[in-house]
Length: 121
Image 1 (cartoon, rainbow, N blue to C red):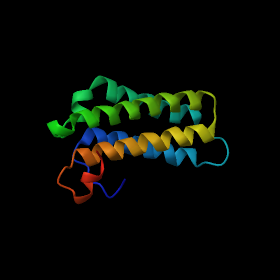
Image 2: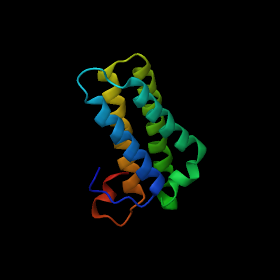
Image 3: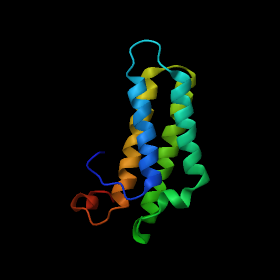
Image 4: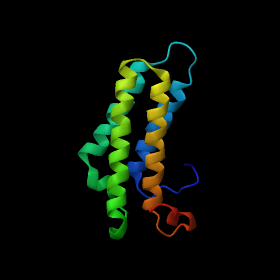
């Protein structure tokens, strides 16, 4: 994730917020469920309110792939919210990992000149 340059500040902001939630999830006792839920809601709202802004920088030929990845991120954030409401740290970690992976894939799609950006098809 950190090896991919951030060319879209909106995606970078979402990734940064999700990494904060990942840090909070590592607390052994008294996990801040409300704060993590708020982060997930904010990330979801950023995507819903400005899908075109989040997709900015993706080449036209990779647009369909980016739409699929963005849908995966949205699904992961929805699942994360359900897991957070249930206070299930294992499921939260799984959905959070999926959301972070999706943001990384979106960043790779936004940087078509990277040598390893050709791996996503």
